[in-house]
Image (cartoon, rainbow over all chains, first blue to last red; front, top):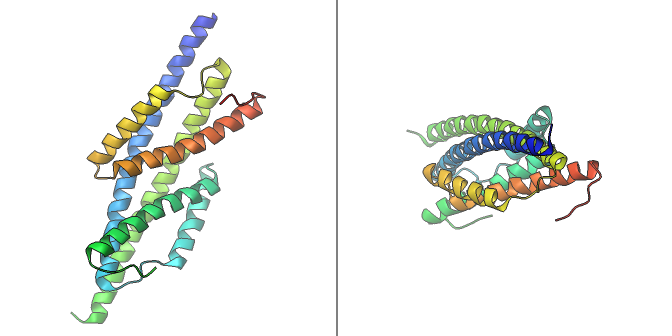
Length: 108
Length: 108
């Protein structure tokens, strides 16, 4: 096979991977949008019923579960934990916005 | 409705949201695992065919597309861009590992 032909084949294969990555990214964005819809509803519910904003036991369970799921899917568990922390930082930002909109001051 | 009844109802609703969040997180972890499977294959392909590791045009297209998808899904486009950057940092780490395993030195 000529070098030129090999380069064309490589480009075609790359194109295929990129189509998969684009589909996966669209799925990720929509799953994240749905996750934040849920966590925003949780924020409103907790604010309305005076439930504590943080729940360390639940958070520990989530970390342990995601690490195990990651292992099973051949994904670095440390990355999975970093990802959860990244998402949770955004959740906290939303909950602070909800609290601010309800005139509740930050209690930590 | 008594305060106690209201608190029990709130707990039940919270439980339902948490079940949704857990299902979504499992989906996210598996989509991320599949995305990294693709990007690792891209890394190998690029290394084998001497294709440039970075492609700024493609990256700009991905950012613009994800921002638009986020807007359509009522997700903060800035968060979507931060999320892509977060994932791409991990992809670069993997590609450096692939390059190191192939004895290629980092060229930036």
